[in-house]
Image 1 (cartoon, rainbow, N blue to C red):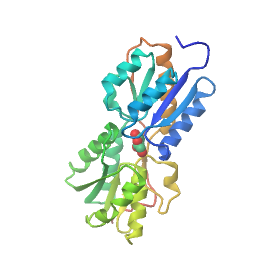
Image 2 (tube, rainbow, N blue to C red):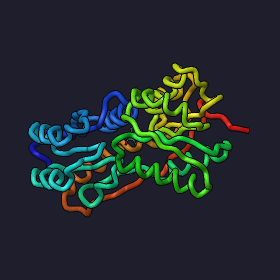
Image 3 (cartoon, protein in one colour):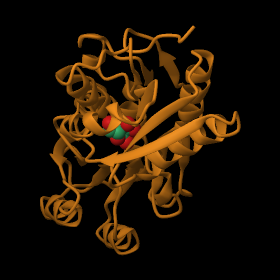
Image 4 (spheres, rainbow, N blue to C red):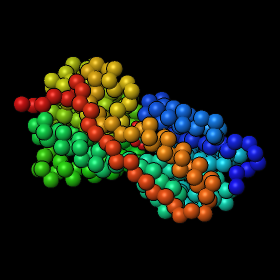
Length: 275
Ligand code: RIB
């Protein structure tokens, strides 16, 4: 039963409000909610997730959509269950079995990047990886490597903070790696790297191609526009909201794990074929 007669309150926790991927996600939820539920959006950094969840519970949320990894997952999900809060976790299949989970096909997305770069004739590329790798990003890496390494191509890795600044910070390193292309695990990293390479006079894509991931709305507006992988962010937000409302109305149903499969490469100016 939903508490009282007021509209159910759904908390939505994202890692960052500055990444347009999450802006799209929130916008899709807002539009889809209409006046069925109240939404409270909050950003929780790496060390603040438990506190953010507790605060939202204290504010009386009925449901929670979490778009990031929960470190102390067992105890957190137990507490939420005890407090009668319905939960859907987005993008992090690692939490399957503890809550309802909604993912996109990150493994396939990573594989598509590998196939794309092979078709473009690259032999040695760099993978820009965040310091803290979430489950969905690990899937991207696995899909990419399964394709790339099987083809006997060379790969060098560089880790950095998951942000535009993180991408910018490794541009000097990447420039010395003797690679012809870079796969950054999201668009923010790709755009930061592109800016950093431009700052030191490395031409994208003439000298180094860059492919990101997310197809965030700024990727088509930067110069050069960013080749990337699009995932169904709009459907992701809407389906996550439906799942958490379903759970509110049917608390006893079996845990749900769903995957949205549509991912594809969007080719723009930041990549070029080598031949
Ligand atoms: O850019 C942020 C990333 O976090 C996206 O790729 C999305 O999948 C989310 O998990």
